[in-house]
Length: 226
Length: 308
Image: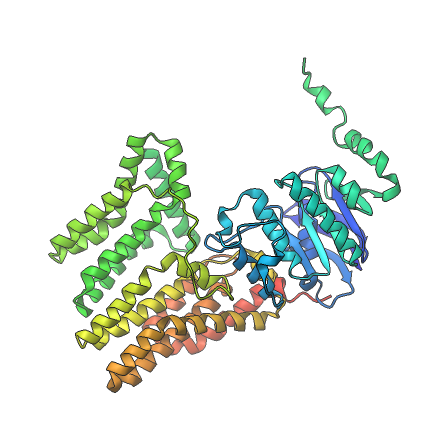
């Protein structure tokens, strides 16, 4: 379990996260939604300890960060590293012994090519494969469906469901509501660095309409399009 | 096109300011240091002109980066693009050409100028699926990336070792080892994305130890043909050979620590000054290494030593 208490983050005077209180349980999938700049990525970075913060994060682990597999929105790759070497590097970092990497290539990636030459979607799939093979207990997936083709989209959705049954904690941010509704147990709505709404699975049917109203409102009408 | 060179000039100035060098000092010191090092090189080996040529081509090759040139091609028409690339290459090779002329090495100066123009005309945008094999795939990334970027230096270094054996010139052999040492050191010049440090489930101390261990192991592997060759053919110089080998290892370890002592930023003036001092007077490494180590621990702790 991960428990976040009064987590705040500032960049200079700008408050990016404002007293966040959340709880993530084992074997559950959580969705975080919100507009660009709402603070989702910063929240993920704070949970992972990639960013410093005020407040407290408790967990069942001695070093939480060593059990987190973090899929960045835009995964970064070295210029002359092949897909296979990238997977190997991330496995080495967590002292995981890997054999027959090719057999675990579920997205059918060209693992012997330089990862930096991959398309956006392929990069995302490679980064996801690498963190899955690290055998983490917690997965933070920042926009896992971005730039990914429909077939891979289906695989990722099934993967998330599988992680849930394996008792992993999964936290996802996505702009694609249907995938969140299909996989999540609870969705948190973020606005201006605050959690403004927590929605349980049984209330998801109303959430999409609510979100539309909440995020769009009358803004399109204000354009005065004719 | 004028704006392009003006922007390049501004970028260079910003880099020097970020590095912590006042511009006046930089523009005075850089030519002096260049001349002193060049004179030293020419006084030490008869192959200096070849080395000089290779160094210049190494620098020019930086301007042949595909993405950058694709961007330039999208902005300028073909004529302006080619003019710009030729002028740019000639500017970068100018200090080397001038020094070669000063040394009356007219043929080399002419070759350098011609190669500068020729490399600008080459189209490097042909991408292939060829991946350069390395023996470091099990432990990416510094040596894997670095080796692929600088693989052409290794045959040159090994060739110099062969030349040193054939001409009975031990100093040239030592130079080839130092060349490999410098190349390996360059693999640690840029800080990696914090994600790649954060991923390690190691304590800060274990992380640094692992990084140093890998660097020393792979340097030893790459310099093995040189150390073996020189120890067989110059057995009377074995102590000097071991001395230089140990020094290369110590400087490599120092540079690994220097990199993380500035992390997540690039190494800047304080680290640079300390390294230069240590090159002039190696015993001060006894003080510098613990200093870099303590700074590295301080910088890496927030990313690696998280305990609830």
